[in-house]
Amino acid sequence: MSTNSVIYESKRNPGCLLQLLWFAFIGIWLGQVWMVAAWIMMITVIGLPLGIAMLNMLPKVIALREPPRQLRVVRREDGRMALEEVDRPQVNFFLRAVYFILVGWWFSALWMEAAYLLTVTVIGIPLGFWMFDRVPAVLTLRR
Image (cartoon, rainbow, N blue to C red; front, side, top):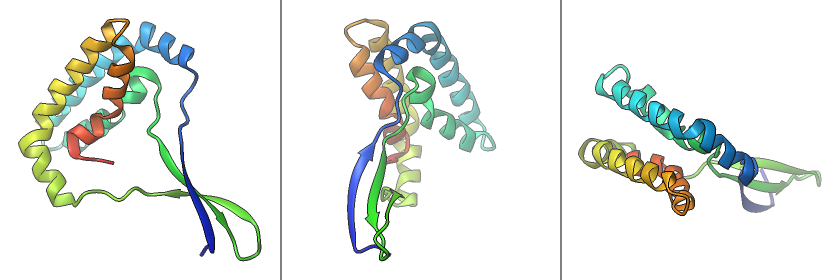
């Protein structure tokens, strides 16, 4: 185990210009197709896990945005430094399932369409991208 550790958040996103170009030429139409395909998958019990996974990947499909990772810099007993990925604590699975059934499935659809409409306007792109980054949390309370 470690004696001292420092936790920091890491983002592996490409540059802003590349994200905007991806969104303008690919993400704007692929994101909408991806959302519809995910919702069709979620209609069936068998496709539900894949549909949720697809919606969790939506920020990457729309704008090449990776979810932030929390990394811990750890000093080992022998003095070496190492990086370890820290899992974020999640809300209880039962509570997440109930939230998804009662709220997440319909609210995430409204949330994503509002984000999509914001990204169509030039001034709304930053807020729309922020909203797409939050889709997993809106869908299933995922952290």
